[in-house]
Amino acid sequence: MNFFKIFKKYYKLFLFGAVLIVLFANLSYPQPKDRTFRFVVLGDTRPHGDSEDPITQPPQFKENIRAINLLRPDFVIDVGDLIRGYTDDPNLIIREWEDFDHTITAFKMPFHMVVGNHDVWNEESERIYNERYGQLYYSFDFNGSHFIVLDSEQTHAMNNIGGEQLSWLEGDLAAHAEVNHMFVFVHKPLWRYEESNWNADVHPLLARYGVRAVFAGHWHVYTKSKERDGVKYFITGGGGAEIVDPETLGGFYHFMHVSVGDGVEYAVVRPEGLHPADVVTEEMVVRVEKFQRSLTPRLLITSGGEFSEKVTLSLSNPFATPIKGEINWNIPGASPWKANPSRCEFTLDEGENLELSFQLSGNGQRAFPLPEIYCEVSDDNGLLVSHHSKLQLKNDWFIREWMVVGPFELGTITPDSKGVPPGFDKAYPPEKKINLKKSYKSMGQKVSWQKYVAEENGFINLDRAFKPNEHVVAYALSYVYSPKEKEISLSLGSDDGA
Image (cartoon, rainbow, N blue to C red; front, side, top):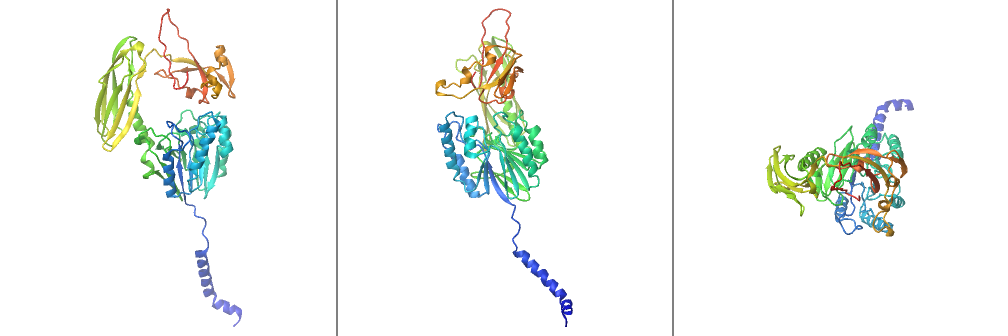
């Protein structure tokens, strides 16, 4: 029998055997790399602001590290505020970073950093950060996914992602458009900042290139924000710094655990247990914040002398359970203010509304300091909200129309300045001669006088008027006219120096 007859006779058997060989070969051949992995996000791990020790990392951060190590994710990302910062002593800054570096050696997996406002707040702190850790914004890849770290602390673009960084972001997104998943990390939740360019310039880019989620910190809470155009937004700032908000508003120590495969799953982990991603949602926070605002008393004073007026609080229970609360008025010592009643209790069923009225009396010429109310609200499981607020005045005594100009350099405290930043003692050009039509060069930009109308309660929000708006000086000017010579009281308040 020749070769061709043998081949023809055993062709089918040969083909079947070849298929079996291929099948067995495929079973033993290495599969493509598994694209599933897990990572952890936490933020605001710095020492507490009220601690006498500005160097040592807080025990809550170390407890989170212990829990994270038990979960063994592939890597960890901290979304900023890593040290206490805000000091003009370079040696202290370095000591703070050294303790941070020592603390994170306890992680059993790679650790990535996002810069926060406590990490970089002026040119010197930025220089130290650059020398120790490199770029303030960057990106990296892991297992088929792409991770983008942004810098919300740019000195001349405060609370904005602009200039070179915005151009870099667009290019980086375009270069990685084909990856499995993309995630973005930034310190401040800029999508919640009215003055930020995030919603106008950054979010459309993230949506166009299919970014899965954005993570931020800065606020020491957990909140799942509204998803927009397929992009999820999370605030995770409970990594170790002080917590002041109640648990109902996300005020608890935690980190986020993210599982990546064909899809992405998000979980919130407190060191003592796991929670679903919607444990605190933006909708829930909005309802509770509305309830807190309703606990702020407002009073219209129509007399400059003695007066007695009614203040009404309109409350609506935002929780899914019945609540009970107690309101107490705090009247400053030696003050003419009186509140009747000075204390009251209330209960509200789910969805129920209630109005509480108080009679306030005082003297319009001696209105300050203003009285405050303190309120605690709880359900059967414990405290839900602890809130206090000052009385908000409405009257025509406030100077509402101002001209403002700035910012100017505040400078840093030196031994010769006796604890006062040099910018407070320096007379900048607007102070030397008032000329509302003149512009000035300051901090790399041109600044001019601009009109600003104060809020109804007399406040001017200089944060919105100027950029940069931290550690700077500004001027405000207003003219007051009197039909005749008289003595008046002038009150000025500021949460910084004035």
